[in-house]
Image (cartoon, rainbow, N blue to C red):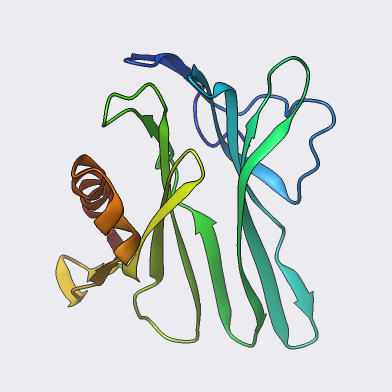
Length: 196
């Protein structure tokens, strides 16, 4: 299933291509690709993709993993800039670990010619109606920034849980535009509706 439509966006960095295409030869990864972006900047030709493994059942428990990979693919060499991995292991109830569709964005907020990437995903292991955990991961080059918290849970127009947001101290060393943008993205994706 093609989750995100292929599109090209013109930005300060030139064209950014969103949409899942073939991962270059020689790049090893786990799971299935659920989001991808490709662009050129001062670091070179970039490809970033998010993958999820299938849910793995073992008698009474379930496990799943999510990965993010960022490669520089110049001169037919693929150099890994960074990789992240998150997972839920041995969950005895309902498991959720999924990329939030259309949350992958490439920006150049500080106008230094190096693209920042950010995306969000949600995760939980629960047997009741409660808010999922949510994470925003942002990178510029090898610098990683994060926001963690819980989603706002709505049922039939009523707020069941307000949600929470904890900005990682890594943002203290970032340009001011980074946490501002990250919080906007968080607020864009934080609401989860259950029921109808």
